[in-house]
Length: 154
Image 1 (cartoon, rainbow, N blue to C red):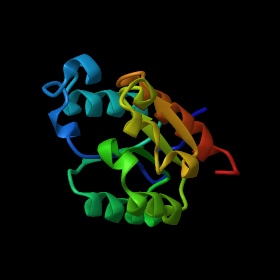
Image 2: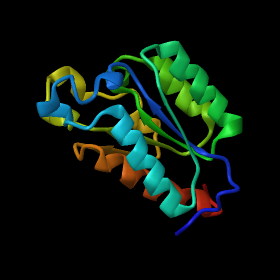
Image 3: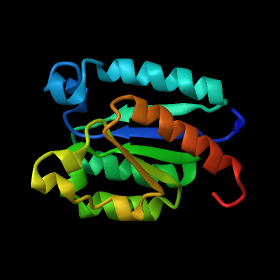
Image 4: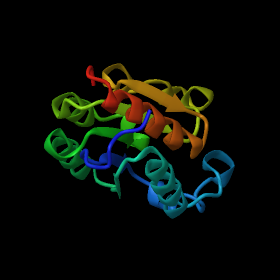
């Protein structure tokens, strides 16, 4: 399904250390940079007739502010909260407050990693979770949001 480009953009929000993609632990996160991921998302969004607003911050409060902004300015959110996934009740509360469909995305599979990564404060309040598929996870999240946002139930 395709969404109209006249709808509000999909916010793609990326958390701490994702600005180091391609440099930091490429054996876990891959060789793509965050710029590569953004280009990939822009291309997939264009195919789907969606606009995106792609952002990254190392600051928890900024991610909270962006999720609050999404309430009025976005059709949906793709959220890779990175390390904050496992620690931030504030981001969880902001996901709930935004009242938009949120897809949680992780490049790696947190369940195949350290025990502390097995718990997410976001998963149970997100519309869906995609993990372990590298940058392809963002494409799948865009596909899902295109469908969700074009249905009357979104």
